[in-house]
Amino acid sequence: MTARKDAPHRRVPRLQVVVAGTGRDGTMSLARLIRDLAAANGRRWVSEHELYANHVCNLLACYHETGLELHRRALRDLLAQIPAHAVSGTTYQFALDLLLETHGPALKLIHLRRRDRAECIRSLAQIIHWRPAMAIHMTKEKCRRDLPEYTLRLAAFHFGETTRAAWERMSLEQRLGWHYDKTHRLIEEAAPRFAGYLRIDTEDLGRPSTVRRLARFLDPSWRRTCPPVHVNSREEWRRQAEFNESVRRKMLAFDG
Image 1 (cartoon, helix red, strand yellow):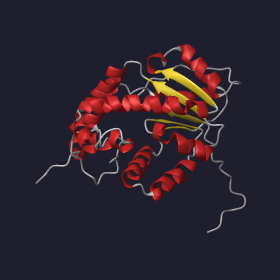
Image 2 (spheres, rainbow, N blue to C red):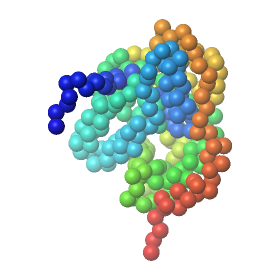
Image 3 (tube, helix red, strand yellow):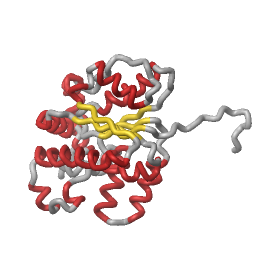
Image 4 (cartoon, rainbow, N blue to C red):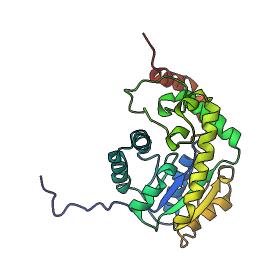
């Protein structure tokens, strides 16, 4: 079937901004805030949260575990086709080199960081309790492998920082502490290679001054702002505790 000549041409957005964080630090709120700011300034931006996230994690983990270049090539091809102006999530910090390689030096980086490390770890641990299959190598639970949510998270042994056996002996909190520190170290090391770098602390997301700072960073010509955004809070998850426990049970693998 050939396309009609009079059919409207849909333009694919060019990736301009990457937001990277640990998780439970406002990546979803920031994705929506970017979209709202663009709309306030008469622009229609596609701003996605965790786009291709599980694929990014699984391909990176497979590459580190096997050394097969085909996994890295597949990830590069995937990232090259991101149909968004901005992406925000908890896995992009591990693929910043490939994002620069595929989208060029004009790409901007937003570093989202929750100052309260201990609280960030506690919040991540609670989410992993409810969604263990989405955090393989972090969770201590045995999960079903046949789920679309099954996601291999990167761990210290992937980077040669410890052995797999030593990692298995670590508590969930210790593993998440490594994830927190590694995430922010990778972002800070990559920052000078991006066209622009902005750090936002989670605790400041609700400030109008933060919204103004973000608007100027995204586009210096943007003069209008919008209200702060706060979604996916811990309270929202707690209100759905019964549903979350049912999802958890479906993710766990039971012997026998």
